[in-house]
Amino acid sequence: MKSEEETPMTNVLWTFLVHTAAMYLAFAVFVVLCFIIVNALVKE
Image (tube, rainbow, N blue to C red):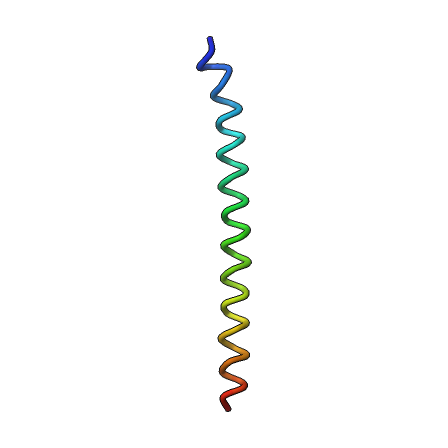
């Protein structure tokens, strides 16, 4: 019974962590791309 009760909460926690990590990762990639583009424009 205990494992069945813990599983949904664990799934919600993992889903939250994965979505948060994906959001931060997407933001980091966006920042890096902007930095590369700005750096390329400054060099020219």
